[in-house]
Structure formats: structure tokens, C-alpha cells
Length: 38
Image (cartoon, rainbow, N blue to C red; front, top):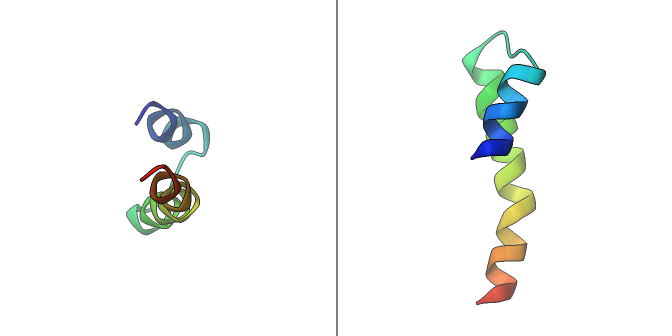
């Protein structure tokens, strides 16, 4: 959550779709790591 908050300020998203795309990208990167732990 903290990283997303930081990125939302740092990247200065202009539109909500840009932010949503960023969140999806982070989800795709993190999901395999989380699944690997299970």
C-alpha cells in the first residue's frame, strides 16, 4: 500500500485509467511471489 501511495504522488497520474493500469502491473508482479509462498 505504501508503495502505491508513493507512486501515485511520484508518477503524478493524470487519469484514473493510468493509475488502474499501474495497480494491475503491480498485482501481476506480486501475485507469483504470493502464490509461491502458499
